[in-house]
Amino acid sequence: MSITFQVGDVLPRLRHTVTALQLFRYSAVTWNPHRIHFDARYAREEGHPGLALHSHLRAALALRCVTEGLGPQWHVTKFDYRLRKPVYAPAELAYAARVTEADGDSMTLELIEEHPSGGVGFEGTVRVSKTGAVTTEGFPVSTAGATA
Image (cartoon, rainbow, N blue to C red; front, side, top):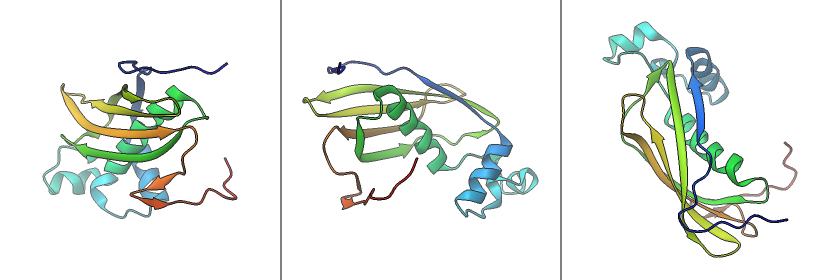
């Protein structure tokens, strides 16, 4: 049985706690040596109140809200986002997604991150499809040989 989505449908919220350890690990696996993500003293010296969350980590969490909410038959074909406020670890984050366009085998959803201090910290749009090729900024991405 296939679930159909309509404009206005809301996916389940994704809640996630980001810790200093996760920021350190994310910096390591993404080869990001910027110390504001893993050295608290340095981050404060640079004017931050704590360890800054990576923009790409926040984007990945937002996409996780969509992929977990829709299921494996849906593929991301386009993703755009903008950060509105910085976030510092430790942080309790919540992501929400709402369908804004639906036409059978493809949909557009708006995404938001509920900022720990209130308001929206991140907003974006994601296009998903059951049939389309997976793309990154208009360039095809091969998924041949990919493993889970």
